[in-house]
Length: 126
Image (cartoon, rainbow, N blue to C red; front, side):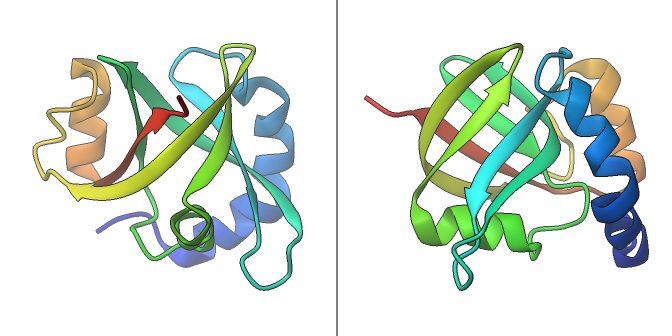
């Protein structure tokens, strides 16, 4: 199922600017800072993110074919604002896990319900 692209478009213009005010500080959320691979323009995309064992995992609630995933994959590095800190991440890899076992228990069920099978995994630079 994954969330519909019409919702993604609405969120990009309406919800994301507001969510961006708190997403970089709230537990379970963050902001991916990335550059357009064609335009070079800077973007800030609110995401659900969880850190465990030195890896950051970002839920792909709109699927794996969204622009920000293409941008960070092409660049190979990106920044993540989370819990009030800026983390430089490298080597983003899209992984599939229909059970969402990588996510905290409370979030896992939500991801399974919307069939968000994919996530990005990345590690800090250095």
